[in-house]
Image 1 (cartoon, rainbow over the protein chains, first blue to last red):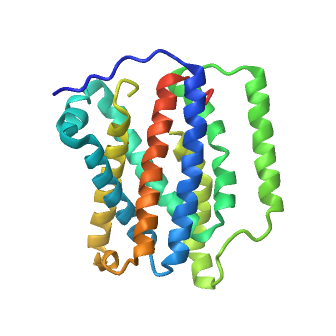
Image 2: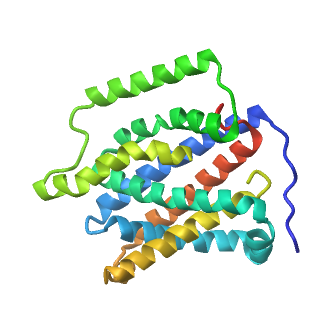
Length: 187
Length: 72
């Protein structure tokens, strides 16, 4: 049985409602992941990602039930392949970095930095998709950037980097990752 | 991408992550025995995290299907 998803027209209200819902779910994911690291201190970033990926795959296979071939192979045509490969690559890198950040920083700090994603989305959407922005959009994005910077500067010690070794290796990686996360999320 | 089903992208992303991480763990000679050492609470947390993560990416994809990316 081939699955042919219907062509959808733009529905801003539905789009925004689902995006808010998605944001809530993503915050919940970050919180649960942090809780997982607290509950199992020996768990590495790779272990946590592998375990969650495995469980997610099982759940998705159960959700798709018998339509796995129709959903995963028949619904992907060659015109979508490049975008899908890019999405998979950036999604994978993004999740590794996000987990690294969550392990070493507070969830609130990671969440604040992720708030910068709209800035990268708008820049990428302008260059890749040709979507235009108005002056108010640019103004509000700039104000978001200023607000996030101010909150982060005033956040004080928001990290769990307590040993010199961690500070040099994992901490530095997490810091770079923290800054890269919104850019990759935007992709 | 907008014509695809919501769970297709999530599945491919999770598949990529699982395969890449498994390969890296094999290269590093890491053990997969940590899965057997999880407590019941850790498993519940893991399943909850996976469910919420799937819901998050699916709802985000539905949002992108319905509205301009830059506005979202």
